[in-house]
Image 1: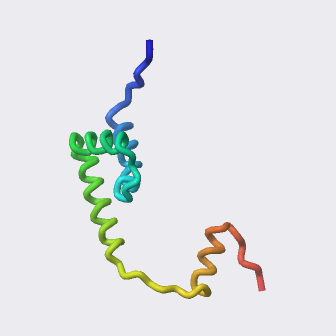
Image 2: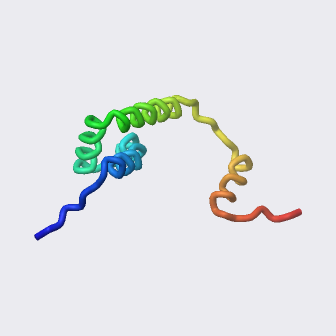
Length: 88
């Protein structure tokens, strides 16, 4: 006999909201997409979060691309690699 894990509505919302970015990026597989969309269609709070995230995503995607020199990107790269800047 298999046990079915019961989840509360709050935990379902939390799980779905964690997937919003993946949904917007087109990274959910069919099974995930079906669960995601089913929940969003039945939950006003998650539908509102998706609407907000989609608007934000679209606004960011509409921003012009900037061409940064390697010199400008070096500090950001160093921070992302958790390196400390050498002291003078």
